[in-house]
Every structure is written in structure tokens, then in C-alpha cells.
Length: 538
Image (tube, rainbow, N blue to C red):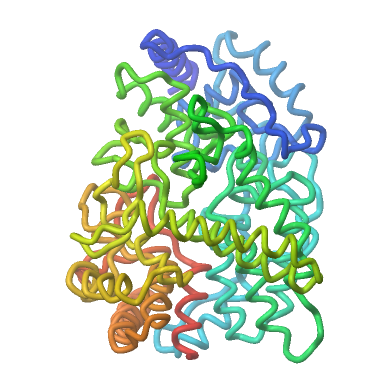
């Protein structure tokens, strides 16, 4: 069957969607922190109508494949040729794409796992397989070249991912690979210096959003791994930590009762400014273009710009997607930007504390005290707004409705992870965790079964670490050890049966695979390897 009929159907669907209260979305202004001259364009901008046709026709089953393709010529020439040929008899879109684009290729290492091998040995064998050398710029590629080697998650995730990397580093630290940790911290510092922030991943289509801000904690980890040398990592990378802080806090000084929110900051009262997730360009995610258009179409009555903003902010959160953002089996009710996430603000607190220490090391008590006061105010606000005495848990806060969301998730362990909870609050959280979150395979992500991947019955490596470390910070070592034992046993069981370490696991029913999400479960897998090795080597 020729693709011209598919393309015609694609155009019909696009026109139908456009008629269903989908306004034209003007390009968002370039954020102040981003230098436009240095920011390559996303493929949806470069290829326009061609991009929409390819993604809507599902030339590739996974929308991420096309945005990772490399053009075989200049993008403008390819687009012009498409516009000239698309209406000719016999035009075949799939053939056109294969002629003008090179599909992404994952390196073939020839590695085969041995399910009888010790897990720690297996993970250490995977580091070189998941490590990519410093990048060479390729014309037209969406990859943002990085100057030092880095570890990728694996599977469809062919590039570095921001918050994944911290948890991968935990394993690298246990493996004695400070060289890789140092190089990846330098890569993220380079991204901050070049683009004003760390994008979701090192791809041009990720530049509109970031991810949970773990950079200062990566620097802290590097500092802890210095093996006797005198390098002061916190002081060395202070300029980039401060630049990232300014990215997340941009516009805070301009907030008022009449204008309580701007980008990633929200003013709750004259003394309280907290953070939320956001995206600077309210259009469909290029890597999930078709899915977002169809979601917006199904969300009858919601403005398109609002819908896309919530979807992309959900992607920035790393929890894409979850009942935390008011989603069920579909995403039509998503409200990410209405939510002040407890985990994000705990990470901002940790950033402020690390900046406080870095300025101490630089011998500037005034600046050090400035960040100390910011951190104290943030910690107080988190405890006041987010701790629910009835549930014994820290919840997200809906700043639009002025109330807690009522959703219990593992994000509620972040106040213990960064040590802002009181002992009494931590004790209450430990009881709630043991009663509601501890499952046969470890710690479940939320208590809701929506079918989304960041909900029950799934468990994720980073949340196991946050939960276990948080418990230990407040003396709940026996419960931490039990969660650790169950998670290691589940990972070991799946590895024994499949020879794989996975992105996520079903922690409630150990006979079933994890599910949900917009793509199949991936193996590799960076942050699972990192957390698991760290727990095995303790």
C-alpha cells in the first residue's frame, strides 16, 4: 500500500484536530537564561509540515526514533524537496524518509549476559557498554555534543539524561570510577554554561525543559569521591551551580499578589517562593508528537497551549506520568504546573545548602548566609504546606486550590532524604511507608493504580534509594534494610530469569512485568545498575 493514502489520512487527522478548538500556538519567547544563537532548533521547527506528517503517520512505531534520525542533507533542502514532491502521484512518505534520513544506530557490543553471573560483576561489565565517548558534532543531528565520556541509560535512551545520571553515579562511585563521575559533572557544567541550564537530555528537542535538579548533589558526590586529592568540587563548580539556581528561580523577584507565578517560581505569600515544573515552549513534545496531539484532542474544552504546558512540565518532572499530576488512565486532566512538588523543592533546598557551603569555602560569609536563609525559609515552607499529620506523609501542594493534593507518593520521602523533616515527622513517615508502600519487591511508587508508569504497581530504582537513604537518616535502619533486601531480591530474580536489569519493576506481583508508559520496558539500565551496585556494595 502506498504511503500517499496514509499521508492523506494524516492530513485529515491534523485538520480535524485543528478544528477541535486547537488554536495556533505562537512560538514562546526565548527564556532569558538561553542564548538563542547557541540553541539549535528542534526537529519539529526545522521540518515543519514534514515532521508532522511523519509523526502522525507513525512511520516509526516510537516517535523518538524520527527525532533521533540524522538528515543526509541540509534540513531546509529536505523540507523543500518534500513540499515539492508530496502531492505527486505515487509519492511514498516512508520511502522519502528512508532516502533522506539515517535512522539512529545503537552500538552493537556483542555482549551477552550470563544469568548465573554475580550481579555486581554483571553491572561492572555493563559500564563500558553503556559508556559513550566524547561526542563529535554531526551536522543536522539533534544530539548536543558533550566534551567528555558519559553513561547512557540504555535501550531507546541513547543520550545522557539529567536526573538518571545522579543515581548512575552512585554505582560508579562504588565501582571506583571517579573519572567517569568527574567527566559527567564537567559535561553538565558545559551544558549550563552553553544553554543556561541542564536540559532533560542532550538533544535539541529537550532544550525547552530540564529535569529534577540533582547537579549540586552530583558535585557533592564528586567531592566525596576525591580519594585524598585537594580538589574542592563545590567551590570549583560554584559558578555553574549558581547559574542553574538562577535558571530555576528566574522571575522570583518580579512576583506579586497580582502575578503570583512565572515560569518555575510561585509566590505563596510575601515571604514564601517555591518552585514548580514548567516548559518554555507550549507545543507537543517532539518525541511524543502524535500522542500529545491526540491527548489534546480528547481533552475537549482545554486550550491547547495549557494542555501542552502541563504535559511537558510532567516530562520535566521525570514522573511522566503519574497520579501526582491529576491523571488517571488518560492524561486529559493533567495539571502539573498547578502543583508545587515536594521532591523538587527538597532538591532546591539541597542546592541552596550546597551553595551555602560553596560560598563558605570561597570565604564569602555574606553570600553563604544568603543561601542559608533561603534554605531555612524553604524548609519551613515545605513542612508547613506539605506535611499531613493525618496521613503521616509529605504530600505535594496545589497552589491554585491552596491545598495539599492528597496523593501519597514516594516523593514524600524526599524531606527525609535531604534531612529537613523533624524526627517526629520522619517517624510518622516510616510508619506510613511500612504500612502502605513496602511491597514484596520493594517500595511502590504511589498507592494509585492508574495504568501510568509512575504509579502502582511499579517500583523505580531512584525511589528505592531515596526511601532507603531517608529512613537511615533518621535511624530506621531495620526498615531500610528490609526494603533493600526485597528490592535486591526482585532485581536478582528478574535477572536470573531474563539476563536483564530493567528500567522499572512490578513490586507488588513478582510474577508480572512492570507496565504503563508510552514505550516498552527498557533494559540496560543506568540508574537501576547504579542504585543496585551501591546497595550490593554497602
